[in-house]
Image (cartoon, rainbow, N blue to C red):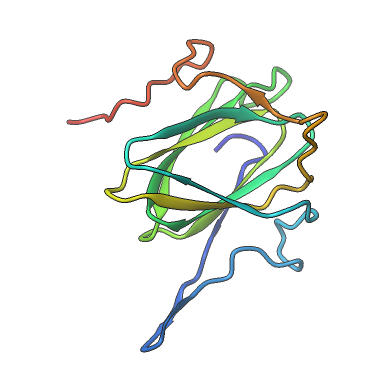
Length: 151
């Protein structure tokens, strides 16, 4: 795992009424601080990548659907510089992924319906000075292909 990336497996409580799972609590080991919470969606096969922040941690959880979540360590001073991690999570594998500053990340909807992803970043978004750096999902600066790996 890339240095500083943390994964919290989420316990799903089920009964005849439905399901409940906690995503993040202020008494969790992962909790840093609250900035804001927002939801993003994507259609099947859509890639939302690459994003990176210099100050903010992102904390992401799939609410509905299934995604391939990919991280790339762009921090030259990191022990895992240049490392890539793939995580597959969603309805059948509930988890929260905490991404530290300097790590590019993104996801591809690998389900058959629109997916819904919750992000709880540690900072509020500032439109006049966003802490957001983007690359095209197919930019060769990151040695990764979003194609499905059959075999």
